[in-house]
Image 1 (tube, rainbow, N blue to C red):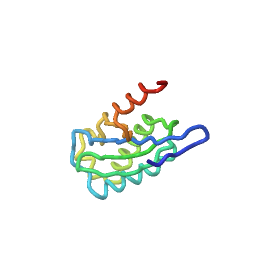
Image 2 (tube, rainbow, N blue to C red; image 1 turned 135 degrees about the horizontal axis):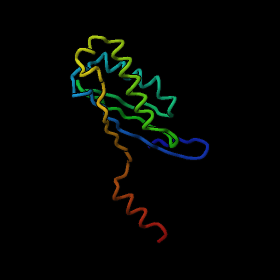
Image 3 (cartoon, rainbow, N blue to C red; image 1 turned 120 degrees about the vertical axis):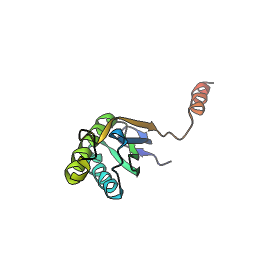
Length: 131
């Protein structure tokens, strides 16, 4: 595990983000996926976030990214969804007709922390402190 640091902390924070196209419309291909990745990379620095891995299916994307303790994950996700939706519809006008009311992403998303240890091991470690 690679630890990162800033002035006051040492950390390794990773998340798995899943974004789904509204009504699971099958509009993502290799070209769209590369553009979505580029948009992510363009805005990630403003939120202390870094892309680790990204892949897609026709109707959703999986993104593994790391963050810092001061990252505002929710604001980043909203900014990314907004920017990517706007730019994809502008740059690929043929997609607009395949979307429901021109909404690209579903309002919902799935965000999973990817800690290395399982929860039970952490609980036992914390319980054993001070013994």
